[in-house]
Length: 317
Ligand SMILES: [Zn+2]
Figure 1 (cartoon, rainbow, N blue to C red):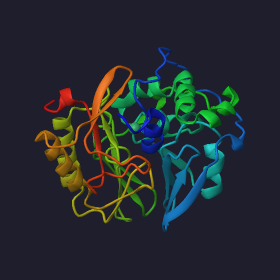
Figure 2: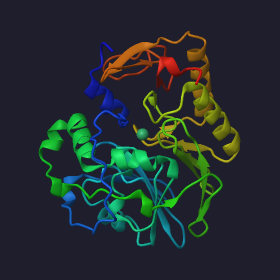
Figure 3: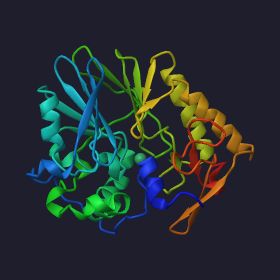
């Protein structure tokens, strides 16, 4: 790509560049003992976005959600595993916590070691091991936030975790937090185990990275475009009429409620060969950004919202 550096692109999307910084080391540690990590290592911020829903942002801009019922609270995603997320969350709620992981990427799943009860789709186990390994997290942080990474030592990182201790998430599951229900939907595409979560009574649908302003669909763990389209159609149908707010896990966090249709429109344009197909290459792997963006604010030059980064060889897959 011409106008956007790789680092800008990461900052913009906040999306883990799967496979990019992977170390060959897969840390298969059993659940590590909790460690004291200085809270200043990661600057967490939060805002109440609904009566019982808090959006938490880490210093790298990754979004997490905390939803509270009468009996329990659920933390959705755990960021990069830098700093004391658990200590921060315990200031926001005193309810017993469960942790749900939307998908196994480094910027969502790396902080699980602090928490006892963790759920994730089993299909992301291998990805989780690769992405949340210490060397990969350090590489990712160094590439996306080099200045901040310089000030971190290994003591700032929570230990890597072993997903074999997790409980598994799959479509049809429900978590009753006490008058507040979370309904689980499979939404594969960005990763094989990507999960969407409906906050039933809040009428809010969290899609994680399944759809966002730069939906990444080109690396090894993603589906091809045709399979992703099926997945979008499935998730749209399964959640129809059940939400009037839609959240994602990067950027500002709010998506328009017609985002399924926006994505289907964009997919159709890609399939017809009429998208801008802007070259984007790194680590020797070529992909395309569907719609040209302006340098600076990365808004689509055609005024549209949303974008897809895809592998041109996998359009019909
Ligand atoms: Zn992701």
